[in-house]
Length: 400
Image (cartoon, rainbow, N blue to C red; front, side, top):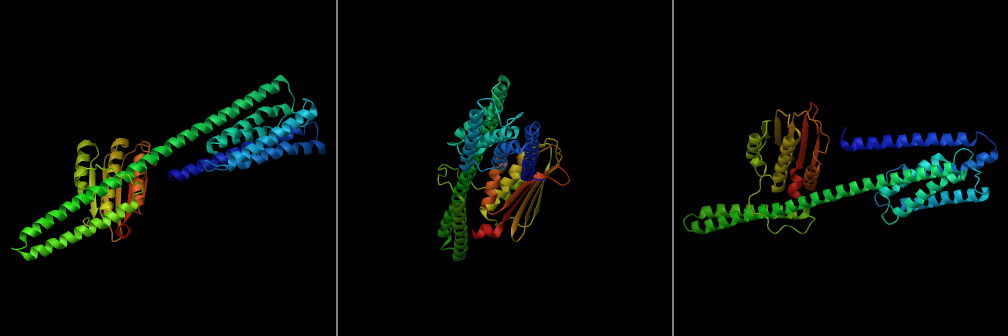
């Protein structure tokens, strides 16, 4: 089961547990409220707190969008209604309590505490604090529906502490998520910068070749005109490939601020995997074997360099997170329409996708692969170990 599926499963289990707990508290409220008085009036008075309790469910149960404005507005309205009911009970009863004989509405209290958590976690920043404070006040005042004895005041304080704890947990999760989003955005920006450097390197490499071919053609023009034609054909191919790759990469880039000082060096692609594996074998306990199926020459430069980075990421993660691996298999296969890359190790160390480390290396790689129209997956292999798979569409890369 993949990480998104596990996350959805945990969310479903948490929602089911919340509904069960809420239902049990509602049953307790009903039983406690009708224990001494089962008249129609008592049942009608019970409908008010039960209705407010049920109204909290659509707020704390679903998964909301971050920065939601409707959520804190609805929470404010619900907290105001709860405070109004509490104030009405206190005024009518003169502080003695009249609506509930043994409970002030535990289901409503739990629901409002859940609302505090959800608002703190997902609400719009400008409205969420006000909504959380209002819901906390409603929770604190709720025991006054039964009476004003010291014990009830203590229960009110305990509910305030529970609401504060819920708000703290919600804020903590919000800060952690925001930090991770910033880190992911930084990784994606770095990945786009790598595209810019690749573009710089590739153009410099091929333009240098064009200049050399043109200089050579000029020197041999008089002695061997046929070689001039061959040189001109090579110049034409190199120029066309350069322009095509430049259009492709510029289309991929979304960050206009490309680094101006990228090094002038040829790009590493899938044809340079042998030296990469040789360096890996010299520093790792597990030998890496390369399996190539098909001709790897003539691939689009961005596909070749991205495939090289997939292998580099797979080998790096094997070295860091699978010290017990005995072998690593790197397979590169070219079909008429796809370039398929796989890095598989047989390590027994427990790992979860995509969090090898913090998973940012894989996140950046995913950004690069998807920008080319490809797919990438990482997870446990069927026979154990860890498998990193990437697929690059060749025609899409050429026609982009």
